Image (tube, rainbow, N blue to C red; front, side, top):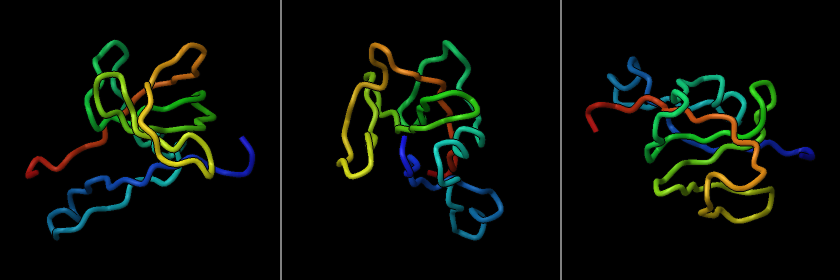
Length: 106
């Protein structure tokens, strides 16, 4: 995949910091976001806001943000604009999805 890393910038709530009114940045790369989990169990429907990952458990190379109806928002490659695309396609290497924790106060 060349010299770039896929990353999706998000905020992951952290309880100690939320109590002080601040969020903690989520891990920065597709691999570290996958590793941070928690993973959505296989067969469970995806929900808007879930992160969808592509690659293998030890080499996650792409992440998108699921928005519902089988679609995700993602930057397909370096220099390309952010797009809305199907999260699954013929021949993809979809790995898994995670459901980052949300602040119940929202």
